[in-house]
Picture 1 (spheres, rainbow, N blue to C red):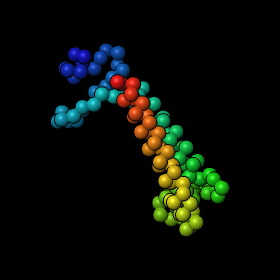
Picture 2: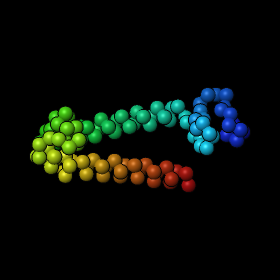
Picture 3: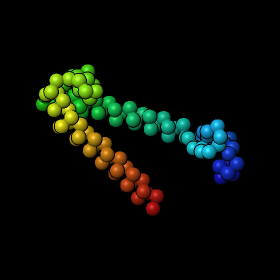
Picture 4: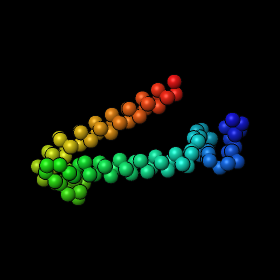
Length: 108
């Protein structure tokens, strides 16, 4: 606890403090937690790419990317923007809400 108050990092090297030049803010970063978070974000992006490209009407991944950035044909735009993207965003947000709810429940 004294490491937190004085700004020194513990000797184990598990926690790093990152601050601004003027010292207005600082955050504690656990390298393992950061690595796990980045890994899970990559998994979410991979699953999102598969979800947007597969279905009854298969759309190749380059066409999905082109459609998301405003190009593509109208049929792909309808399928991705109206059918698949809202379902993907709902799934991600519900999963995040369940995760936050579980974390809050464990902290109580």
